[in-house]
Image 1 (cartoon, rainbow, N blue to C red):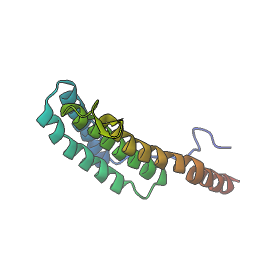
Image 2 (cartoon, one colour; image 1 turned 90 degrees about the vertical axis):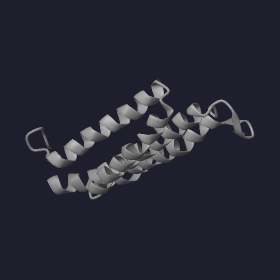
Image 3 (spheres, rainbow, N blue to C red; image 1 turned 90 degrees about the horizontal axis):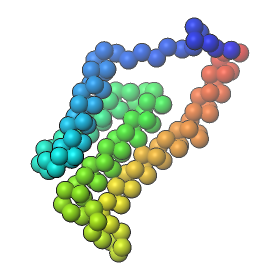
Image 4 (cartoon, one colour; image 1 turned 45 degrees about the vertical axis):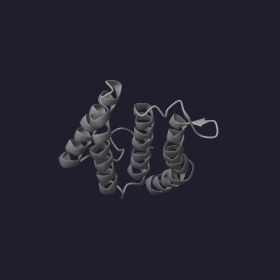
Length: 137
């Protein structure tokens, strides 16, 4: 049985950690612009926020857990950005297709992100745990 002294260690290279911190700054700037109704600034901050999220995902693609969680983050930002744009242009409460209001378009990327996590926790993680268990025995 693994304890805290024998469990595998996961460390993040300093360069990647700095990139993750910058990503948080971009995301906060995007959301603060949304909150303050700075339409142009909010929309502009979508680009670096998603770009850095994609870069982080690409750099961590060899770790399945990181890949799946980072894919969920990319789609979360996309959903959040969709909702923000709909709100900025007054489409959030306006029917776009039938009776579906614009803000509900954000459910598409939210759902895709959730599906990445569901797939990871139902199929990949159990296999990883089984493999880890076999290795430690």
